[in-house]
Length: 356
Image (cartoon, rainbow, N blue to C red; front, side, top):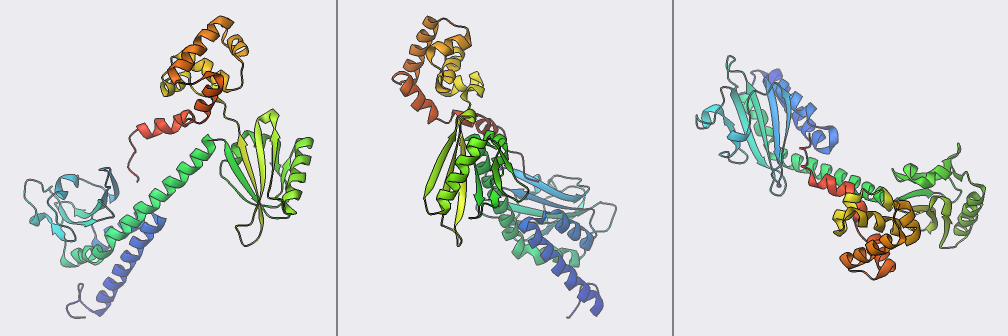
């Protein structure tokens, strides 16, 4: 190797090893290890005071990842940078340059996104040398794709979390059993369902029901499915939950899926949220929730402390506002609505914090 960066064969090989290690840590960060190790290595190899990565997403949200003390904001420096080129403080106009020695690199990262990487030293120290710049040059072909892969992984995790939240919101869960009844896996939120107050996982990894009648029904349904029946459904009125047992032949080995679906407690929804969703006032929302929870007009009036005539008057107003015909139309409208998504709606309305 002619003109090795550090002088001498051993130093040159050390530089190659450091460069390889840096690239490896970059790909590790992209696959879930996080940016700390990569930035720590970059800071160590370049002997910088700080190593900073700024990720700008297509939606305009930026996140920062840093190792060491960061003394300036990368934002004002980014606009004039070309992609895939390493800049020094001398390459930029003096109006935007902080009083620091630095090397900075910007790359494209995914559709509409970009990443900016910077190493910096305090002004009382010496400037960076050519080998320090070469560390940034070496990772230039990989930085964009690694940041894009990291963002894709974050998005996948968020999609999975959303699916889990939707499942929990709908009161659904599942347990996967082998043909002998041993639990193979289950949904994360399954143990939180009301149905699981009547279930337990036995020491041998089997699903059992504490209620004798329900336990007998489940064993019968399980036996029917393992013997060839497509599915069996059993309802537990005391916990307003249906347990559906399905023979699943989509896997290499036949398995049994136990699907749990519990009734939604619409009366637990805040009256204001219920009212806002359907364009009702609070009293109308309270009455509508009780009707959809199974109350008659008479029992709903008693629960609210109203007269029967007051309940009838409010019910007519509800039907008119929602454009439905009677209690049957109200039930259909509410039970097929997204009113139960209140917590998700509230979360979506808040600014999404940068992923760090």
